[in-house]
Length: 288
Image 1 (cartoon, rainbow, N blue to C red):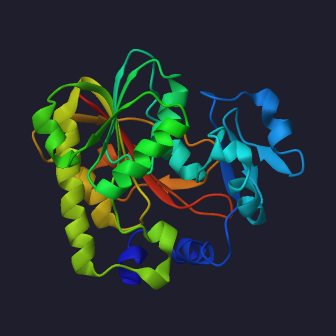
Image 2: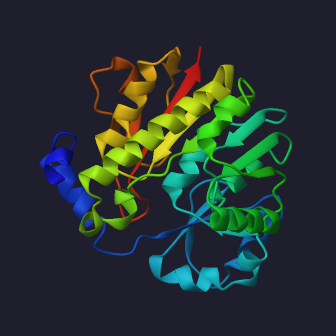
């Protein structure tokens, strides 16, 4: 599998990927403005040191995770513990009030919480999850964080057929081999990766059918393999849809261009991991 990654990353970049798993990452906290405000920051975190990344996100030391997760404010839904790369996926969808928005593989709900915050519960938000146990986790989290959303226990591969041309914006954070989270000691087999890639292609096809003409979609994964990233997007470019890829706003992270013979994918990005965030793949497209 490392030989596959060597086709995408330089030897120095591969070393950075490996090193990123050797120590716990710092903790990003996302403020839930549906319930709280910045004036309460000092009340919540008065005994901890942190760095403000932007109005929503604050960075804490890795060792503070257990303290943060036991806080009353956390259990009451005032803030969410979330990897910064995940936050950037939802941020780049650039949702607005009065839009129709779909979070396609939504559990456990972090990105749905992001989306609801960005448009302040003033848009139609549909959240889909196929796994029954994860669906109830999603339902519980969204209620706790004050998110107004329609939640569906559905196979997202059916959404395009059930809701054609319905949504202005779609977030597809696709099920993947999670290599960027689990590390090189837990690599999936080639057979498993191919099965996941097929699922991702079906999900993206369904999402594009459900997207309005002129609508926008963010596709993301937390893995490094080309089969689950560029090749999924290349498959969409070869399909019946006409797509325009858009620039990403990846504030504060180091990223490199996607690796593809399709020049359209030059705007997709691979986030390089570090002590503050995980590696990720993100692309944004508009349906013409």
